[in-house]
Amino acid sequence: MKEIKTDVVIVGGGLTGLLTACALSSLELRILLIDKGIIFSDLNKKDFRTTAIAEGSKLFFEELGIWKGIYKHCEKIKTIKVFDRNISRKINFSNSKNLGNLGYVVKNSKIKYELIKLLKLKHNLRILQNTPLKKIETNQENTIVFSGNKKIVSKLLISADGKNSFIREIFGTPAFKKKYNHSAFVTNFSHKKNLNNIAYEIFLKSGPLALLPMKSLKNNTYNSSLIWSNPSSFSKNLLKTNPTLRKEILEEKIFDYTGEIINFFDTKVFDLSAHINTKFYDKRLVYVGDSAHSLHPIAGQGWNLGVRDVKNLLKIITDAKKNGLDLGIDFVCKNYHNLSHHHAYSLYQVTDKLNSIFLDESIKINLIRKSGFFFINKTKKIKNQITKYAMGV
Image (cartoon, rainbow, N blue to C red; front, side):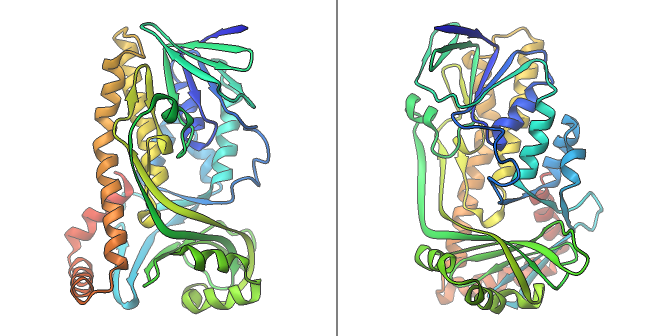
């Protein structure tokens, strides 16, 4: 059996795993990234979903030197318009203090492409593809990952292997989980009307509909991404229906913003669920991104929360390295947990409760929503606070 020694091993070659590798590669550490799949395959096709990058995440990307590459694929969000059932109940968010844009919309595949391009230049990073885990052992000094004929020995194991984390299962880390009887219908499409850097969040009776502007390559048409939460049966039937009928159904909801829909590029349905680990660490192990938490997409903050994990982990490991500490000791891993868990748990609860409130059709809740929208939209201080929080600055 071939033995590989490294300082840090990252399991998971998705966006969070790649970002973690990129962040830690700035330190003088030996890093090994492994994934059960082929990380470098179909970079432009595998994941057509879009991500709304918050301003706070963008500032972190600038620190890492990766923002310039990602930015060229982005479309800015300068204004967010939120409607509850109809346009009479509205909140318009914009950045009046000029601290940056409200967000940047980009395809996941473009982020992955730029991260991999940079990681290929790192001399202290090794990537193992098509490398499924068999078992993991830990002792007082190391964590040991077994895969095929390889024995990987490291000081710290970072779990970035997604919502259905195999590592979480191996270690038996408890998690709060919630399944929603809803699915998100996701599509990228072209249309005739320019969104002018405006993103829309429309709370319908069936579930929230988000409309995000995307980078457009043609002068006469514009591209956008739509994420619409509905009861699972409706979402799956909408996916199966013919494009002409689908166009009519969607134009009924968004025609005022997009004009005529010209073409659908990609469509898919994702079942909605959420979870949060009771702790973000174990013996010589930390969890980042979806292996630690997942949120209802109502606020579009899932990816940015994962970015925050990576930023916190970089800080903790940098401090530990400066002080000559073993990177995998409980003190270091727990410090990361203390820095990340509370914020993630709060956001998990907020998104879950917001979803319940906006689906509730009772007279009492309807009145509360109506009053709340009116009050927030008329109160500049509160709008600015919400805007700043959503931007992550």
